[in-house]
Length: 539
Image (tube, rainbow, N blue to C red; front, side):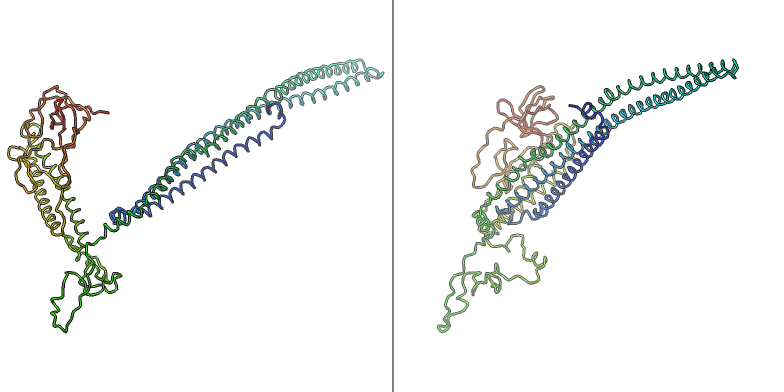
């Protein structure tokens, strides 16, 4: 069943129905747009909420951050931020796949519908024009036929009139004959117009309008189908991100299960353990026996009365529990903090000194690496002047040496303080290279004494934990290969010679100092100038 057959006479109904269908599409697009706005606002509020409760960078070093409950809370905030991103993705996909797509399709349907309605209007106007011609010819035929009848009656009456002359009779007959001829022509014209109209009317009702109505039916069905797809997309868009949203929610659940109350308690102990012994019993001082009061004072730092742990009446001598000043100013805080952390309890002091030593060792190692790289670069410049001027590196080498000496002094100072605090004095070992006038590498121990120990591979770990036994790592797997473009003598320590065209395995990429670490098949390793080879890395 189609509209052209069943609704051939319902043009107004079809026009109204198709218009209503297009308005429904517009309404749905508006609905989805408002939904995307809700999703975007929801995501924005979630992001702001996560940002509001997330710790600032300056707060991430706070002691509480090591607690599992705090870490889990941060994980929840991160998961909520990811969840907000998925809500934004829902809004974006709905806007792209539904709103924009349907709006574009709607404009095409409107233009197509407008074309069909204009075709129907033109066919209607053409039929109405033909009908007007038919009606005009019909009225003319009617008028001329009456005139012909009157002319015939007048001719007959004149012919019977005995008083009429022969000329009058002849004239009346000619007039009647002329009128009859005109009436006959009008009759034929009317018949032709009628035939033409009937043909056009048949074409209009059985061909033209049914075809237009069927096209409108097809348009409307395509609109309904496209709208149905939009309805499905409304659900599928959210279903598509549900697995990721589920992972976010699983992450929140995992954050909850990761909380370990026992470990948190141990962290609090580790961070706040003072190392002090509990106060001993207060001795009885018998003044009747003439005991010297001063001789009864024992145990340094032990309070001579009950300690007020709640801070109401803390002993001045037992400084850890000293009462805070009412006016707590930054100046007062700075006055109590010392470089050797003597203001902290013993246990906390040892930890802070150990941390400081590790920081100094890492910084010192960076300077040593920088010094080594500058020395290698100087060797290359001396042997290959076309690559650069060795004198240009003098200021950098001098500055690096000063930094190394300064850091060594700080290292010794903090090691001394750590020993005073009762620490083991175990710091990070390091080996440093100095460069003599010839550019040769000399290995030094931390105290600056010369050592016969050589360093075959500068990329090996320079420092390790004091109590751990140092073991050589297995050979590093190659990350690519290189082909020598020029000969390189490899006269400096740590470098390796190569011949033009020789293929070597790349073990370590250039770190910005102009050197690449390579290895031969026999296991020999060393550094070569990066500019002397073409490198191909493994994918």
